Image (tube, rainbow, N blue to C red; front, side):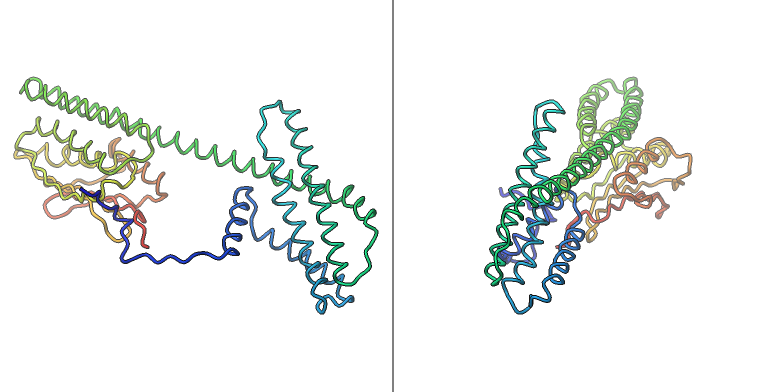
Length: 374
């Protein structure tokens, strides 16, 4: 059997590919490098434009616009300087070494100087050659070389060092932010996991006295529930299908306790099971529906679990019969934790809604922009 295609990857028609030109590929690589060293591209382009304008103004009286070689010199030389500062020098500074701090810094400084001086010499000879082609007498190569080696090369080294230092600081900041994100996610999940197990064990304890064989079977599902919860605690997101299996184990235990009083209808689109979502989104809503809507009723009640796609959004709903539940600021741990996690992952407080619906309660989670709209 062929694997089912992910909904977000389904194409409305045959794909048409257009090969990018070499200039486009080069442009993309340049922008990719700017992202690596955390330089804003507009700053680089502004500096380049400024240097070009200075060169054009300097060479204006020499007829720069009527001499293609002189015009080329006025643009190529600034481009080489910008490339040396933003690309050549930072490479040496960003080389990882296993030496001590002082020795490592010395090696990076030496390499950066070598790279920068080589770039400076290349700029000198290129500029002299372009001016020669433009019909101007060759200046003193020795003087230019000395000035570039003593001034331009060290300046490129220092500028490259500053860029590399800033890039390292930005990467460390992003790494710390990512670690903080993971730590907070695990903290929120760890607050919920004992709560889920505690409620499941309470139901199991009640079942032991009523129906020991059913309690024994429920223990097996409790073990599966625990395994899935431990798996969820190791990840900030997991497949939606795992959430379905986790809820099924939880509902099996509750079903053994409530018997025919708990009637469940699944309207779950299983083609969405591969979607990555934060763990334990629906379980608190299922638990809340049983606790406040179904369990207090003598005749029990109905529950509908619905997962569907709505455009680019993912809709997850839990409906239960019984007296409509009114969410209050003092709502339990499960709902508070769920709201905190939704706000943390998606940056919005309005993703969860609980309201009366017919002769029951509808709890809904609307996750935005889960699907690609391509």
